[in-house]
Length: 107
Image 1 (tube, helix red, strand yellow):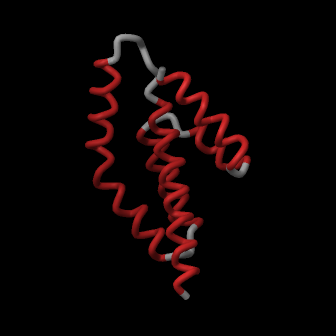
Image 2 (cartoon, rainbow, N blue to C red):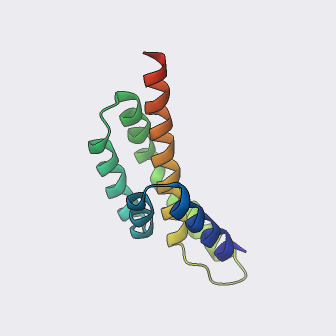
């Protein structure tokens, strides 16, 4: 089930997002990769609101790591934990883009 969900998310990413987003999501396979991706997103965004949203995620990462490991250990079948980090990266990237878009609308 999770494998097919990951495949569906990747298929949608391929068709609806920029090619670079898809490629970046596939490279985010661990908590450390995710941290680095967040740092890179903060550099890329000029909007302060988006930067603040991203900054607020750093303190929660250890809890998310524990959740991910616990969740995977409860699965009946072995699942690659890297899919969770890649999906989370896409969620953050889209959220930051939405925040930037809303800010532009308010100006």
